[in-house]
Length: 216
Picture 1 (tube, helix red, strand yellow):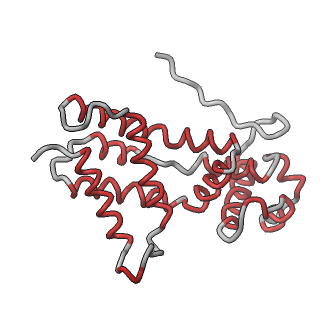
Picture 2 (cartoon, helix red, strand yellow):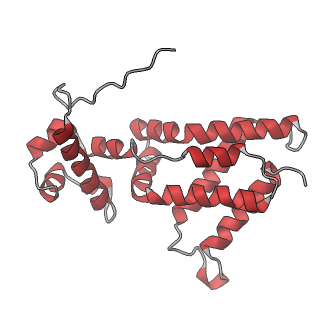
Picture 3 (cartoon, one colour):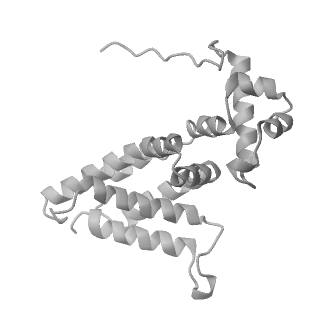
């Protein structure tokens, strides 16, 4: 099979972006993410991003056509999964809750590493912006497929209800994990009940182990 050549990134005027241009582009992305930590996407302006990045609006428009485009650029480098996470969902969970907790912990840690940009993406997606809906779908696809395959395997072995739709079941699992991730380890849902983030991750792991674990 021939090797696919990676296409060079082009700026807004169709020119190939070199090393210096890539640094400028990345700087604009980093500044935007920093600013989004304390405000919403609609509150940001191109002029403010350019000012904090110590460049000009004209330079900004060489690389992006809007604030939304910078956020989409940031999402390109904010993965929902990695090779280790895929290996965890594909491997047999012979240790039940322990194996499931390793998966839940890695997923939530990875999500929280990029929580600012994911929060902004999800808000825009829920408001109906198709670009962010598509970005959210692309990001979740590898995990959706991997969990769906695990559900199918459990159904074939008679451990999971055969009437469940595998992809829909995987989608529900991902929705739970994403909501759990968005709570964040620095916040407690109900402190007066003694609830901690660790408690919630362990509860999620137990539920996953009940459905996706291997029989002992």
